[in-house]
Amino acid sequence: MRNGKRIISIITTCFMVTSLCIISPTPAHGASNEYYVSVNGSDSNNGQSKDKPYKTIDKALGNASAGTTIYLMNGTYKSSVTYKLSKSGTSGSPIRIMNYSGHKPVVDFSSQPYADSSRGFQISGNYWVISGLAIQNAGDNGIHISGGNNRILDCFITKCGDTGLQMSNGAFNNEITRVTSTYNYDSKTNGENADGFAAKLSIGSGNVFRNCIALNNSDDGFDFYSAGNAVKLYNCEASYNGKGDGNGQGFKVGGNYTSDNHYLEGCIAIGNKKRGYDQNNNTGFITLKNCTGKNNNINFYFPKAPKSGTHKFSDCISSGGAGKDVIVGATVVNCSFNTK
Image (tube, rainbow, N blue to C red):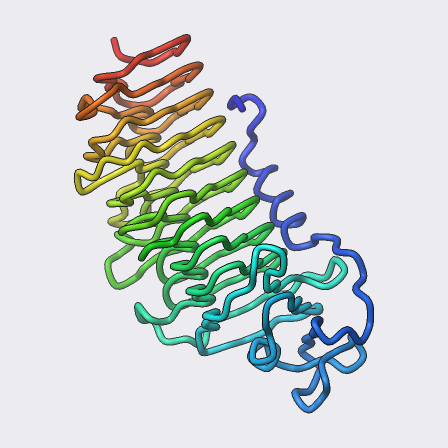
């Protein structure tokens, strides 16, 4: 996707609307594996229909098991505690938390203390699906994943005290699709840590981002520091990241000298404070296919050859940028880099 087709303000506005207005089929009433939650409900209800919903997400989670779907109805759900999703579904029967028939549920954690443990949703279990929610103001991560085979779709995450969505501690086979993460900022370090998305600090294999957008976060857009396994990205965007003391990389594809062969296709980085695509001491080889860097301080920065193999860059475009691109140890096909 080229910069001529990417207009940030339009994309952001449209995505905020569509990601919060996912049209779900109207669920059947009274099924025991479906629970409804409403800000006007009561936890003394049975929660099994939209006419008798629970009031709290906690009540529904307490009854959840493999195959359960929890529908959040329109409104703002405020919580001062982390929702700890430690149960597990199965491949054929995941546990789902999703909006109800196109409503726009907001889960607001502004009453949480600002602390490393103050996450919004903490997923240590497997086979969860979170779809069509707005998540905001968590004291740390909006969503933190250490489990596997989880799916996060069509969500909007904003104004958290650390990275909007982070995978670490062995997280594996997770897919993040059409999620926007924006305006996350950690005040205690003046923005040094809060990324849009992170897959770092010893993840497992098989983690994928598709059509995700990281905008205006204080540190990086996507951070893969010390990942320990390769991550794949398709059609993702990282733009205008880097506030305060934040690094300001669009896609930080490594760090701590781990050897991780990350793959990025159809991605774009615009206007990041430091670099659009940054090797950051990754000793593995990186594949960039049809990726664009525009108006970053440096668009593409890969100053070291991999320990084995070569970087593989094809059909990439560099436009604008205050500094020259640095490309070392790469096979380059049909790219337009600013290296002269």
